[in-house]
Image (cartoon, rainbow, N blue to C red; front, side):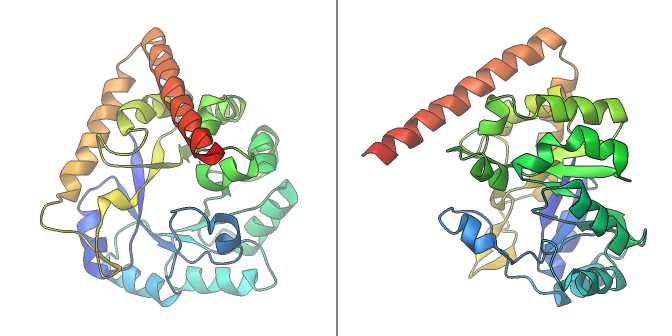
Length: 277
């Protein structure tokens, strides 16, 4: 079954999120280079601090806690040591390009927590078949936001429509490595809804996604789930859609692939028309 990461800052939100058993709380410390890469996009920009790792760990002591650190830099060893000491179960490394960089990350981690590399550059994604043979990768996530920018594409889901993930996903399936892809909105929401995208997760072998901001209701920039939103129910809807695709045969999944690609290309066409005007 599919599992989800949810970025949380508020301890109460973390407790509510973890009531949905498939949800793992996620603290995002990445700052370096993020504004420069994504400043023009309405994408998540973290304001979390390392103290949030401790706060969320204390709020959900039995949960599997994911922490995203900064891309490799002179302070990486100290940052990794700090989040591990504060209780991170998984440490996510963003924005690497080579196996050497990822190998350095695993050396710094020293097995104290599980590495969860975020493959979000074209060079890294292309190198997945080689990296899974050479490095102790147990699980990974493929990030589509920075990936589509690195590919100089117009829309976050274009790598799916253009077949960029086909070979890497096949290598991960063959190696038996668990992986997730991108993010998901709530059922029937988003420019390309989960009713399309989850079929591609099943077809490619993905068993994970990041829950988008549509799963939270913001009040003065605080992470607060409103009374109108039952997070457990919304997560169950996604799981039911995923289960429905799992029951489909290859031909049915192929039909969804074509429909999803058409939807994505329609969005790309609209984006390009707006740029022209």
